[in-house]
Image (cartoon, rainbow, N blue to C red; front, side, top):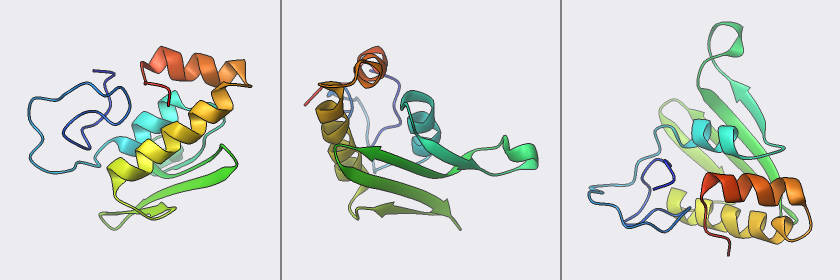
Length: 115
């Protein structure tokens, strides 16, 4: 696996089947995406803004993707389940990767399957 937090029966990023997914997990999703996406704008919580990511914004494939973790809930735009949202994000990044070597390099190094 690419190390992504589990979101579906198989990883939405690299499509590796996972052994145990009892329910979708969003813990660490924003931190994981912030570490792997070029040009991601993040807002962190905590002292000196070094804590976990609370807000993430990415423009990919002509779309704006927003994720916000607040009061224990994850809000996504465009709206959808976390696994579907992440899959749509990777598809948009795949479109960008065709023209931008930096995006292509980031997606390839992460081990994600291009769409």
